[in-house]
Length: 326
Image (tube, rainbow, N blue to C red; front, side, top):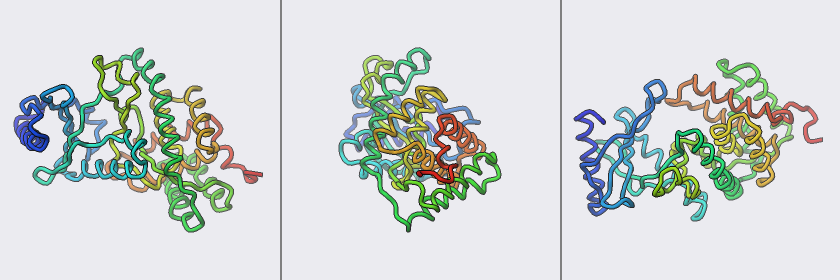
């Protein structure tokens, strides 16, 4: 539970929210959601609080910005609104949308319907991932098809060469990653790769996928009614493949199952493995160009993991070939 002073703040926010929703919340039920350990939290991490409703359907979660970063939640909800506008009504339903947004003492907050996440039990989690992944990957494929934009010569420098240069010049990254970024830049400059942007969440992993609640929490993912949350780092001009790769890595790691799903993703989107590799490298460069409160050590770990996956399934080979495409 939060300290008494913080509890008082949350009660006031809950009262303000309940009033706007027609007194559907039991304000006194406000309680904090367990946060990650301090060494795993970033400085601008938001805080979450559960609020029970008059009925189960009214149960909510309040997300509150930290005092030092009062716009953190507003950035999240703005990103979600951008994603919904680009995706349209049907695909946009999968974007976690707030019931209301407001500010309290200068700090932005938002109220969301309460959802369920993946379970921690390894056996249950395995079954949940196997069942939910087809729906998630299908949504990613359709989202690419809906938002993909073929880029012209005017976009090459800012959209592709600049983020690749971020990787190639980052001395904290291993030489192998910097070298493949240089190879990708050469392929782009020579016109040997497909240049396309699309909507990208950029932090799509198991923890950012939630499900409509079921009577038995463990059954929620089996209904496949999922919502993607935490859109603060999204980009309407992002890169293909990064969301699929990051989700699959979090779900199945460096396994043959991840390879199979990437193959299916490529076939459904008409993207080659080389297109996926270029997209992932540019996305990493985009993230690396503005880490904000994201620790550099975690970024390096992310780059290594994504690179390892692309290397393992041969996606990087095409970028290294001088006669690529011939």
